Amino acid sequence: MPDAALLDRLNKLYTRQSGITSDVARQVAFGAAAICWFFKTDGLTFPQPVLAALVTLAVYFLVDFLQYYQNTLRYHSLYLDYREERLDKACIPDRAEQIQAASAVFFHIKLVLLLTVYGCIAVQFFRAWGFVS
Image 1: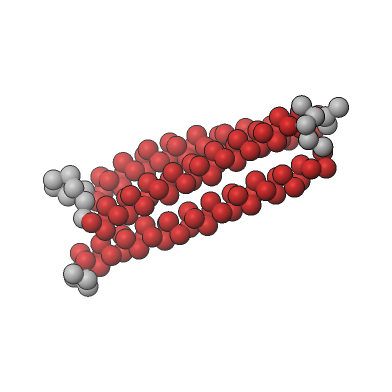
Image 2: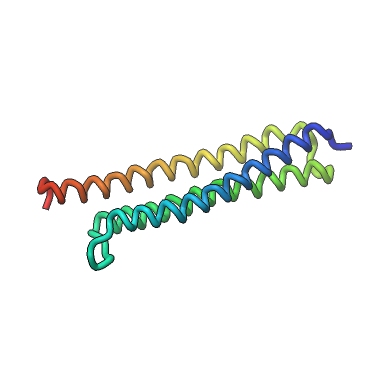
């Protein structure tokens, strides 16, 4: 018989990850609109470095969403496997570590993407100030 406390804990992890996924989706929509409006030119176009930053930012948000989405799916799968007794309680820590390891890869990809975004924006500022042509 599955441990009820463990099932509850796994379900809370699943619910938490689902909520984070929804929050990220909302932030993506509002953040993208704000960035586009701030950097737009009169003709509703963007300087090339800003466009590169926006495209990279879109990729960043996609990876961010995918990180939490895969966590949600994997924790839910873990929950179902344990609830349906397809998984021994002793295996849960290993599976949870695998989920966290995958999440860490997403985290590092997002870090590189964010650094790229800020680099592109910095290039635009340097161009605007006349430091770079």
